[in-house]
Amino acid sequence: MLEWQGSAAGGGGCAPGGCAYLQLHGKGTTSCPDDDVFVTAATGSADFYTDASNARNGVVNTFVSVLGAGTGLVVRTPGGSSCLLVGSTNVQGRAVNGVQAGKECGTAAAANAVTGTFLHVESAPGARDFSSEAQLQAFVKALRAAVGCACAAGLSCVDGVCE
Image 1: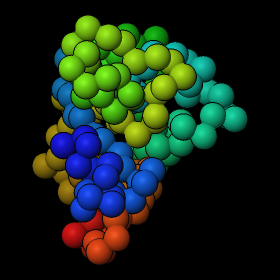
Image 2: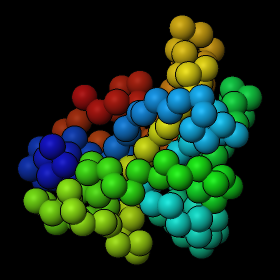
Image 3: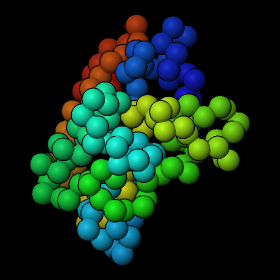
Image 4: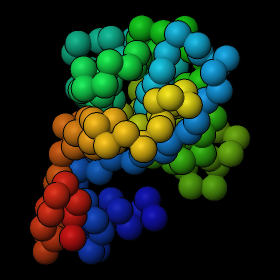
């Protein structure tokens, strides 16, 4: 899937540099109780999120900013939280962040290889209750603001999705 998604020339779904990968997790009420939603790029390095010169942190930081403003939830990254649920052992995150295929289970991504295109989202029970239309729309708005829509040749962006 990762290879196909990134191969615009081979009919994949994204223009080069235009992909983002989302993984939603539910955290318990006692895990990181100061955060309603905790978002990472599968690295716990606070510098990754706070370094203003790091262009790779834009997807995560935009998502966090828009979701927090649109819901009133406490939405943070390792740059502003002590939560340890950073997703650094996440196999999908490792693959997106450049770990060689077949080595994702035992090899961490190098800090300088973190792409910023993997959104690892840990949500408390109240923050993942999408029975609220307003909360669902705030999540969608944050995702669209962070990722945008950059489709491979031959595909068109329809409501934020390449078709």
